Length: 307
Image (tube, rainbow, N blue to C red; front, side, top):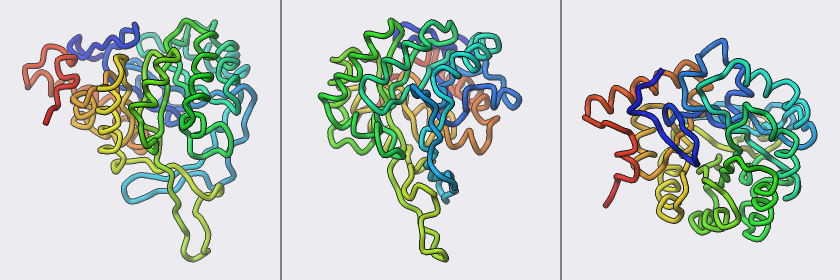
């Protein structure tokens, strides 16, 4: 368990430390519970949940890159009813200290609120992450985050469905990401997540075809770190709500970069997939760094960067 110096309060929720597992990288928790003690983390952002089951993108869905990976899973998931019946009860029973944030997706703006309505009575759920930035689907992906009117409608619908905090996850491809964040908050968002993966294309030169079945995919890994840190910096300056920094995190130093840029919480994904036991180690290293540098509470470092 992490020390009290790492405690964070974000959107009214008390997290024992700022480290989360990013959406899509740890399933719904039970998939990795045999590898790491989930209750040593600040929280878990679940795999996507849609109104109805989604088969996802054709295989192959994931490919390694030198600096990370490219994926097009296509938001495959069993649907809201199955998640409510099976996965959330498991989390309620087996996870007590780590907070659960459910990643929500939809093909229409109204679908997000409908998903939330089906699972909102679960005590396991602390908050929601509205995924309006997935590059690996042909409908209900980045277009919602890129259209301020659609985004406002989507967030307002989700807001009407729950009293629990809503984080809106934005794409690094948005030309005015801070402005988009302001629109999301104005519509009722309690926080912002930045960033999702960057769209990319990897080609198998022998087959003269994309390496992924979907064709294009989302690029993640260490190269995304400065992109995400910049987005967290810009968004935290634009809105007075907590920011979840996501992208390229593989060490305590990476977490500190996001925090100093203004993030309250930080999620690791690709690195934790490659080395599942990395996440608890990051928490320990973060606590040690704060101790070595005389930091009584990690909140002291939030937004500390300047130039």
